Image 1: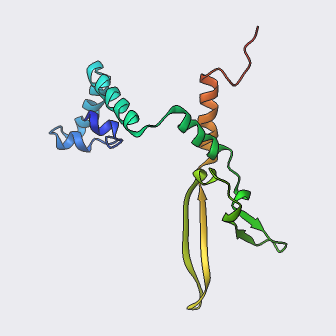
Image 2: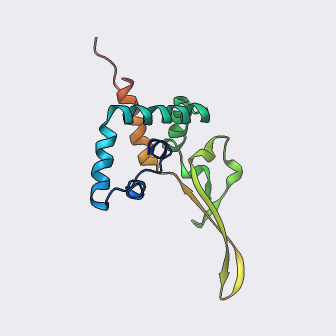
Image 3: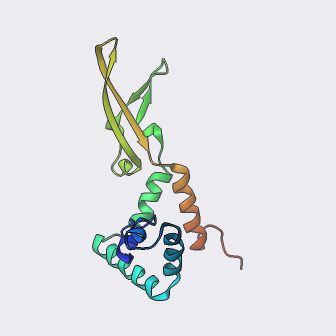
Length: 148
């Protein structure tokens, strides 16, 4: 169970049900186990090992949050004089792609005739990233100057 939680796969009670708990009690038993100090410590240790193995640092996480929070769709598109949106990835700077969640391309057709390609760019949620950055800055005491 601890390994499953540390890998992010223990969000539901499915594994506890497979372990023999009844469906009604699986959630309650899981909550009880998570409050157990030994179980908590095993989960913390498993998470620590995963972070160390991935070479992920707090600075890496902060850099990615900043990339998403400071993202601007204008870096990825141009708007012509008629108001048409043109995707322009040639202007994207190194690091800007960290804010991109998905790029997809499909054939565009009109009455069965191929008219070109339709490209879609989806950025990660900027508001969520800014909220997480705000929380970090508040917790680190960096948001508001200390009174003297």
